[in-house]
Length: 450
Image (cartoon, rainbow, N blue to C red):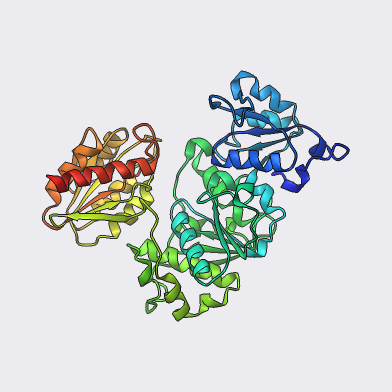
């Protein structure tokens, strides 16, 4: 059972319940974990701090125990444990705590229990959730509403560092990790896509699908606005809650309000339509007004490293899609350039993703395509492509990103595209997707200088 407690239940009260008077454990000290720490301090609590890899010097002078170095034993003595999203609910050590009857909660779940949920929108999906969240938040802000964009993007809405401001709406990007911590849902939830991802954390693809979609069926859920072009979602309609509104990329073909958003690709159009449908479901009157939508769309800045054109050199367009960490968004990125030669840079941290669907998509692409395969998963990508349709897509192994950009630039001239859409995470070679995108931009500047 997922805990149904709230942050207020944890306010220090010496003569109160076990939750209010017992020890609180805080497990994980990333961005959300530090927000949890500040929240607990504002509630008068001095939590036990535990992390798999404790930061040197602790947190604000307070020591942090290593999970494997006494931390788990310390958590076992707590009345409640607040965990960071990165700590899997399938871990044996977490299950040991739950077996002892200790509730293990997450910050988003604690906040939702007492939030004004009729003004909260949770947006999830394997890919597309960040852009959809940003579009919905931008529109609301342009219409003059006080809107917080939070969750997996932006800041945790419960963080005291936000200044305690009240908002008209909260648009919350919800990861599959965070979804497993929810004991309730807002009435409106959006699902932008579904594809295998984060399999080690969820310990299997069906667990991932169930966890990702669980935000649609928790108490309070009413309407799921979902990607109608996804066969995986349609096959799992039973996991999408009481009511479903399907949105397709080719819906409302005459609408032109999205043009000022400056988005590339059919999937981006669908994300914008999902955002609009959600705002309509929330009862925002401007969401039914084409002129108001177009006016509000002006000034939107697409998120960095999400199918972002970063420059043109000698007629070749360079596009940073570093956030694409699995096959689905990479195929969508390729679809954004129909009829154009594309040099695709693919590969990164190897999570065991099945690259056969990528190979099949490349085999069906009529325009010339060069795949520049980089470590660590590059060899598996190359092997999948060769096995699917030898000779259909040209494959070139590259030792690093800089080499891939140089070779892609030479091949794509005079009017092609060099697309960084790796279908793999960045870790191991880069700090994160932003660091990988920055490295790509530097390599592009080197082409320009040459």
